[in-house]
Length: 188
Image (cartoon, rainbow, N blue to C red; front, side, top):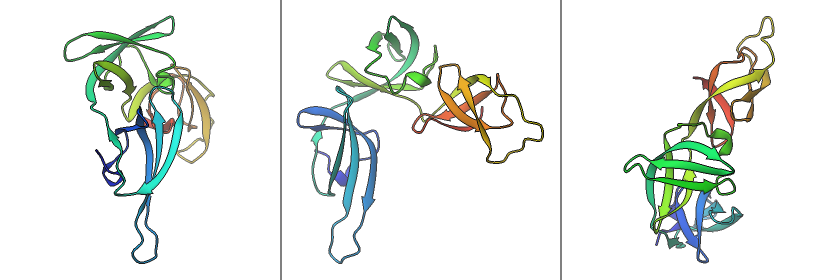
C-alpha cells in the first residue's frame, strides 16, 4: 500500500473502493518544530471523473491498484467511440468520449506516444504525452513589426482547441502544446 510521501503525479490509488488518479500534489512543511509535512493531493476518479482534494500526513496509506501501462496508438473516431491499438500485440479497444473527454482536444488520427492504463484486463483511461504537435488552422494574420514579445493572439488548432500563440505564428504552422495546461510551448 503506497504512502502519501511515495505518490507522484499520474499514480493510481484506491479510495473507498474506486480508482483515483493523482492529478496534482504539493507539499507544505510547517515552520513549527516537530510539525509533520502536509501532502495535498487532487485526485480524479477514473470512473466518474469527479475530483477529490485530500490533505494528509506523509505516512498515511492509500489502497494499491495493480495497473499495467501499455503503449497505444489512436486510430479513429466513429459515433462517439474512439478506437486505439496496443503497439505490443496490435489488439484494438474502444473508449467512449465521456471516458476521455479531457484528452479529446489533443487526439489526432494515427497519434502514438499514448499510454493506456489497464487494470484486471480492462482499459480504465489513457494518458497523453506531455506535449503534442498540432497544426494551426485559423489565426489572425501577422501584425507588421511583430516580434517575440509577450503579445499573443488566439489560434484554432486542427482538433478544435484554441490556444494563445505569439503574434508571429501563422496559419498552417505546427506547434507544440502542453497537454497538462493546454498552452502553447513552442514551434514544432
